[in-house]
Image 1 (cartoon, one colour):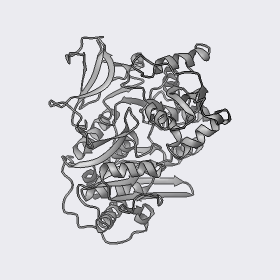
Image 2 (spheres, one colour):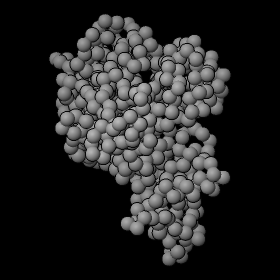
Image 3 (cartoon, helix red, strand yellow):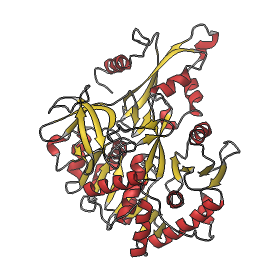
Image 4 (cartoon, one colour):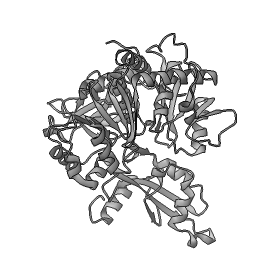
Length: 504
C-alpha cells in the first residue's frame, strides 16, 4: 500500500483494522489498551483543539516527549494540521526550553507541566489532550511528502543544539527502510522503552504505525523487572534498546532474558557502541531472534545495519548500507576509496535530511551527506567505523558535548581552567560517563573550601542529569596544543594509565 506520510498510513491502517490494538500502556491490573480507531479519534479531536489554540501549518510546536498516549496523539495531530513537531526532553531545564523556543520561533509549547518561559508562548498541558472530548477536525487532506514534519535537536560539538529538519518524505522513507531490514509486520507487538525526543525511539514509533503493529509503551530501563513483566504480559514479539539498556537487563538476570528466546522475533539496538562480549552474550541467550544493530545520525537515521547471527563473522563492523540508502567512503580529494582504504563516510537517500534550522543545507548539490565519521569498506561489503567526527561523549545513547560543560565551569571564579572527556563506565552500564579535570584559581582565597559537591550543585540546575560529571579530578594544568586547544586524547591516556592500563 502506497502512503505519502506516516500519519496517512496511520489513518489507513485504522480504516482497514479499526479494532486492532495500537497502544498498550501499563501492567496488569492497571493496563490500558487503545485501538487504532480510538487513537485516530483522539488525534482528530486534538487537531481541532490545537487549531483552536493557534497552531497552524508550517508552525514549530514544542512537544514534551513523554512515554504516553498523549504524546503520540499530539505528535500526529500536529502532522495532521501541517505543523512541525519539536519533541523535547520532558526534564529539559526551562533555560534550555527557552533557547529552543527562541531558535525555532515557537509560539506554542505542549508540556507535561507548567514551566517558566516567556509569556509570549502559549503553554498547553499534555493532560488536557486526554481530558479533551470536543469536536473532531474536518480532515481535508494529509501533508505532502515535501512538507516539514519534525525538528529534532542534536548536540553540536560546541554544545549548542543543532536543529535537524525532517520532511514527511524523510521519516516515511526511513521507516520503510528500517521495516524492510528488520522484517516488521502488522502482527508485531513491540515494547518501546526509548525516549521519543531522540531519533531512535521516535523512529520505532513511526515504524510500528506504518506497519500497523501494536506498540507497548515503557518508561526507560530504570525498573528492569517491569520491562520483563511487560514483555511477558503483552507477549511482545520485539523491542528496541540502547546498549546500556541491554547491560541493565543482563545485570538484573540473564536467565530472565533467555526466557523470551522463543517469543522475541527481533530486537533493534543502536545509538552507542556495544562491546563484543555483550553482543556474543545476547546471541547466546537469544539464538533465534533477529538482533539488528544500526549506525546513523539524526540527519541520516539507520544508514547501516548488521544482524548479529547472520553477520557473526563481522561483529566488529557496522554492517552494510541499509536498503534504500547509498553509502560511499571518500578520501580527502572527495574520490571514492579503494577496498580497505580509510576515508569519510558519505550517505545519500530519501531518508537523509536536507537542512538544519537557520544553518541551511546539510547535503551537497548531488544529495550526499558527509557524516564526518571515518571508516573503510572491506571486500565483502562490510563497513568498519574507525573514528567519530568529534569528541562527543556518549552516555547510553545520550550525547554530551565537552565544550558545553567546560563553558559553564569556566564561568566559575574559582576555576582557572578545565577539560571534559568521556571515560568508560566502570559499572559497564552506560558505555561512557562524564569526567572533568579542574584547575583551581589560586588567586581566589576561599578556593581551599571548594569540593566536588560544589561543582555538582552548580551544574545541577543548568544541564540535564546525564551530563552531570561522575568523576572529578583536580590537576595543576590541562594539556594544550601550541594553538591552545585542549588535548583530550592525552587526558584519556592519563585516565587509562591511572586505571592500571585498562581504559576503564
